[in-house]
Length: 412
Image 1 (cartoon, rainbow, N blue to C red):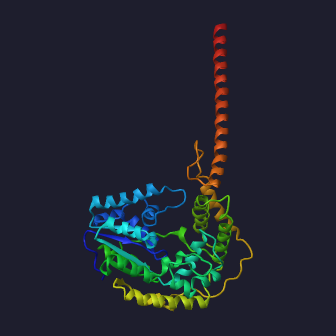
Image 2 (cartoon, helix red, strand yellow; image 1 turned 90 degrees about the vertical axis):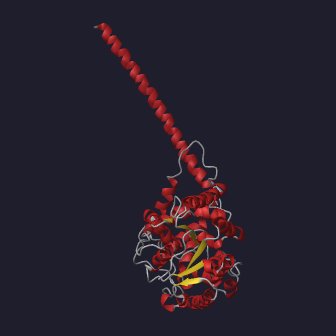
Image 3 (tube, rainbow, N blue to C red; image 1 turned 120 degrees about the horizontal axis):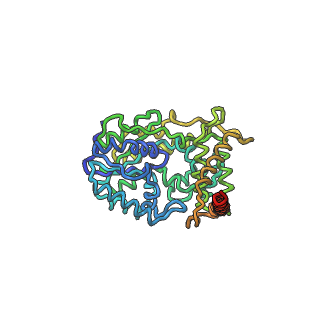
């Protein structure tokens, strides 16, 4: 039985990534009316107020977004909590795990001394494949085996604030996933009595929601993570296709704003929304990488256990071989799956149709979006001219009709 947090607490779930944050954000969002009945508030207009959290924690937002507006948005959310004075307030964003020193201090100072930090952790061995795929939807990354060798290099594991491997591959991986150092950092900021670590067991789908229900003093079964079909793992051929597209759209004329709109939130979402080919090969992790990840997990478990934070769950899971993914080497992809290519294209088209033919393009639009806007605008203007011509013709026809009726009336 997990004792609930004291009244007046603001629970701050900081992730990190790939540890059930999306599931819990969805569960909290969908349960807001029921939460309110139990004195719990989850403010916002989205299940995850990502850009507002980024603005304060990292001092940046997604390309094409307004930093100042989203920074104010975050302070408005906190003001809403303070005004409502719920029994317990909840903020959740995995971007907090990467917060700068200034960002972390701002979050904690604004929330006050009753803020309680919750960190969810999963075995590193379970995160490797999904995190590689996630990176591959945003930036060019090496093939999986090469990426693993860079990430699991002892120098990279031991220096989470530095480049991950000699090539500087995805340096944020260990900033996010040295879970032991993440716990130690936040314990240092607020004290062990204000940090709870929840160990996620992927075999127990009720475990994570139950932990949050306990912390929030909610009835069992109230939090139910929605089924998110748009956040599934990609098959190996799908991941290869996606990364080929990312490679080709990571150079001019594509800007980061264009890439975010049409690739990250267009192509990738379209691919994930479509059902995977059941016969397609899943991503396989080499045995040597599994061994190394389990070794790293055991070291992390020891440090988390000694951190002074409260631990909910079994830290032994972080080095449990029973939780390792399928091992092996993937077969090189020799052909494109037409279904995957179509799903990817649908995702891009959905974003193309969202570029409206307004009089001016968005100030923060990238060159590709501007080109799409220009074409849409030209078509809209052509339609306007055609409608005007039709209006003139119709007006002329009506006038001729009136004249004809007058003449016919006079003749009678």
